[in-house]
Amino acid sequence: MLGTLMAFTLNGIVLGLIYAVVALGFTLILGVMEVINFTHGVLFAYGAYLAYTLQPFLGFWLSMLVAPLLVGLMGLAIEFFLVRRVYGQNPLFGLLLTFGLSMALEEVIRMIWGRVGRSVTAPAFVAGSLDLGFMLYSRYRLFLAALAILVILAVWYFLMRTPYGAVIRAGAFDAEMVMALGKNLPWMRSLVFALGAVLAGIAGVIAAPIWSIRPPMGTAILMPSYLIVVLGGIGSFWGTIIGGLIIGISTSISVMIFPRISDLVPYLLMALVLIWRPRGLMGEKSILEV
Amino acid sequence: MIKSQSTAKQRAFPGLFRSIHPLAVMVIIFAAFPAIPLIGRFLSLGTEVVIWSLFALGFNILLGYTGLTSFGHGAYFGIGAYGAAIAFLRLSHSLWLCLLIGTLVGGLFAALVGLIVANKRGIYFSLLTIAFSQMFFFIAFRWDEFTGGETGLTGIDRQTLKLVNLAVNLRNPIAYYYFVLAVFALCAVIIWRIVHSPFGRVLRAIKENELRAKYLGYNTEAYKWAAFTISGLFAALGGSLYTFLINSAYAFGLEWVQSGNVVMMTLLGGGTVSFFGPVVGAAIFITCRDLLSAYFEHWLLFYGLLFVIVILYVPTGILGAAAKLRKKHKG
Image (cartoon, rainbow over all chains, first blue to last red; front, side):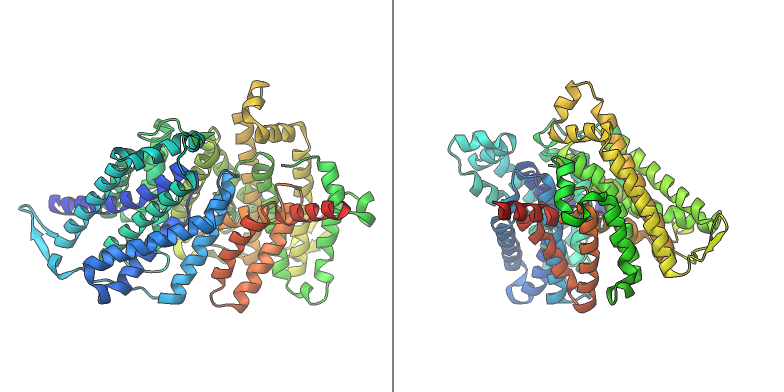
């Protein structure tokens, strides 16, 4: 029993870390551009599908580099040609624009890769399982967790310790002032959107071997992203990570204890947190509320 | 931006119709629908249009008049549908009672969610409405004993309606179409009254400047809650009517795609500029969806792109664009 609980908790942490990477990209775009990006999930799916297509040719490492970059380029194009045109307008517009676009992009997945599910095999050097002392655990999942942590730390460093990150954070706080100070806001926004897309892409690539790769996988990961952002607090970096872990672990453990309502548990958590802390666990009063 | 409603309605219905109330014109057009050759054959599509028109018209109280973007009203449509279906299967075969129960149950859920979201604004409001609607979807999807889970609820049947000494067999699709139309006409009048009442003016004031409305002494959160709940009630009534159209209820009805659809309809027709926008939008949207899905395998591609095109090129909707064209034409 305890062993099973351990295994489910570990699974939950791995899941939570993937969720956190996806949600980081989502909340970054939400915080800086004030756009609820519905295409975020489908970009995650593109990451996984590109990994599926590229790995036979490029191998694991190279495709892990190329696939997220391609997804980043998609994000850049989406921002540059479409999303850019609705900034500062009724938030409804960004919502519906990306909502429609995500439906169209999901259909493009069906046109290219078909409706049936695909699978990606984990690379050989992390195949099998590792003896952790108290239990055996999949090497790939541990490797995946390590990668996700690395990505999260890299994003943290970029946002909190580099001048670019400072501009982005300032842009989320007061875009007009950032422009007045001579920073190129349109480019910064494109960059942030691309970065968010890259994060979705990375998560898609590294999750591919343990995920069922099907066209609606993007829509399926979008909801946890919302919950995480609401739970952790909009615009909070560590809130997003903590939110991701909470949703991941609670989903995984509820699958073990009461499988029938496992989908529901994250929502109940969100409702509880909202009643207790209306802005989420680590949320502060933000510009999004006005 | 709903400016003066009286000028908007005159612009929307020029010439011949000017002396008749625009609501009456709308109902007459719908009433004539089954008689139109060719198009009139697609009666269930027509009924669906009327139901979605009702849903969208009520939804516009929230979106167009109060300026709140709920992305979760599909849930109340779906809960209404289940409410009516469960009432039919477990309680009573009376159509009136089932519709009433469906409407009240859906409205109750909207009222509860409204309590949590009414003090939220902007994107945060949308984010929360999405999350709650998806929560209800999962409940409906998993609660097999009550909602039938994945398979949904079937075996619902329209009973004969007794009006004084007249028996109307609603199993006849035409009879049901006119029944739905009658309900819709009644609701349209109510919604018209709501948005043109002092209450409706306060909603518009909230849309223009909530802070100012607050300083004028209005409890804006209570008004927002009321708008949320009222639109939820109409959504649930639409859902209840829909249950009796397809004689079944599915969890799919609660999905967020439905919520997206109603927002799109409202916007597409021009709900932000005209009272009748949602109706025009529903008619065009449902017809487009039906045509696309009939002729293309990958119709969702075009369907999705339709959203993009509307947002980028006709953001005020068809009636908004028409008004602009007319203005240009006049000089």
